[in-house]
Length: 304
Image (cartoon, rainbow, N blue to C red; front, top):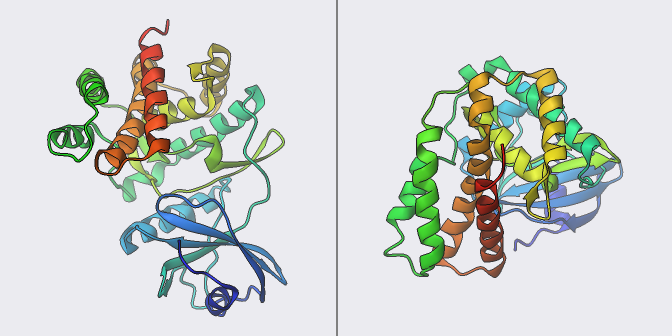
């Protein structure tokens, strides 16, 4: 945990016209950054310290947010400094200040599922992705690289490793088929969104924004918003697809491959958690792995 105090935050704020820091409060930190709520005499600001991302990766994320702002996309946008740049290089890492969006995580229901479907379909319709291409951190090749490390990693989980290898091999053929491409957020789960009641206010954390088959994003979001008690809700799935198609119509090939991309949405995030516990045991990640495997096994029997 980094030592961020009012004096440090105020030093950064000197690069802006955002007032004087009154208070600083640590928010829930992600795996790649730390977020603070700054209370100033002019209002609240989100103060983010990037712990792991390289400068070019941060710049790419910010460039995509510049594009999304032109579409009035619901997101928390960064503040420009007085020199019109976004990034502060500090002793604690790269710092960017964002809008502080008031609200909360959503209740999962048909209204909130419809809201997220409209937003992500809008994202997938943005054509300028062709000029800002970046590979996803999630891929079958990435899963195969993890499999190659099974025999030499610190912590051995034979049953998990066996299932992961089997599932990777199964999905690889389906994911090889060409599909429509576009901007992909890659991590739209309820805790990365802010709602006021049933209305979407912002989608957060564009750290994994990339270009990929947009059906991957659809599969991830269905995992985030259409499951109740770790089981796919047909009612919420129908709502999501109906509302998504009002903004961007899925192709016949996408509809055919959707069951496998719902599985891929779970499997890709399983790969991320699995890579984490292979070297360092983590009870929370291991619990999430067990949930995702249980989910994947239930999807194999789902009557699409």
